[in-house]
Image (cartoon, one colour):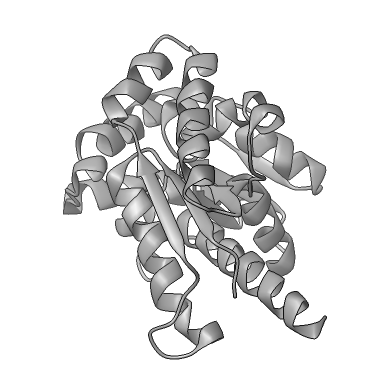
Length: 237
């Protein structure tokens, strides 16, 4: 049997996209209507934001660990978190976690290298963009990166927190993202990281000035590969 995937959810729209991707794309690996077992646990986004607003990443880590322990009790074999911003707390989580984790920025960096991209535009919440979540992983793979300008970070953050997490996808928001991405393209970026798990619901390869690195779906596909790969190895034994 494939491994049991545990999803530590933070915001609903991004977690739902990750869950749907695992379930739908599982069929290509396991056959019609088939996918690994998946369990998801969600604490209120408001509680996460209460910690994030005051830069309390230990508080975020404790919430992630609470979900991790519940998922371990439910039988999960490993964990993913389809929330880029929350990954700032992951270094505080892994040593105390009952289960191993996949890191969303690792999967994005791997995909960038696979495509031969050299300089990535990073988009996401201002908390994510101003952190080292992506820079650390990208530098480790020899990749350059560019962050949006400060005013752009604020505008993108407002779109994410006031619209995208509520399932609102407006033409004006897409136009703003396209403008920011095009500006970073003019500064040498050859791909854009959709580094908030809701952004792929608004920006996609068909409407982006740059090739996209969809963090949500890349993490979901990595979880599928791990879950099914583990089953294949067991079968060979």
